[in-house]
Amino acid sequence: MNTKYLLQKIYEAYRKFKNYSYYDSASLFSRKHVADFEEELYGLKKSQFKKRFSEKLNGLLEVLLGTNEQHFHQLLDEIDFCILPKSMQKDGSQEDKGIKLISNHIQKENLEIDSTTYLLMLQLKYS
Image 1 (cartoon, one colour):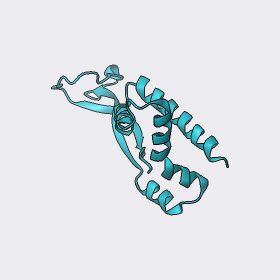
Image 2 (cartoon, helix red, strand yellow):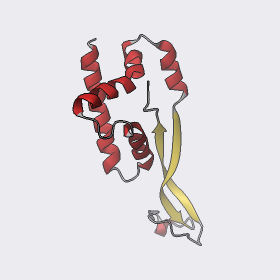
Image 3 (tube, helix red, strand yellow):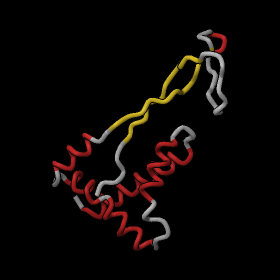
Image 4 (cartoon, one colour):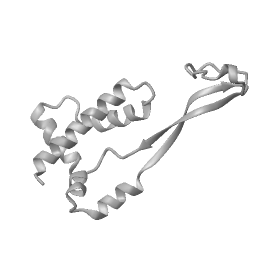
């Protein structure tokens, strides 16, 4: 497979992920990962950005090409997840179902988690 083509597809997937995490209000973890990944890339010219971006993703490129199986297993070992509350029930009653936790105001009543969101935590730095 053409390395330049594969790197372009990785870049497109990254841009889609970045766009999704920017507009999704529940993905603060994703936003943090994007910001950490782009910290070194901020302010670079387009040619420098492409070069540094490809350097940062060199390990992932090797995994996708099948040339670095050890790095592939390392990436699998680093996969983690986070469970966040999505909606709450107040005192477990059905009439209050669907209460959204919007602010950091401390509630005195007991709140039960009605549904949860699972976030897959993947490594963005592959070099």
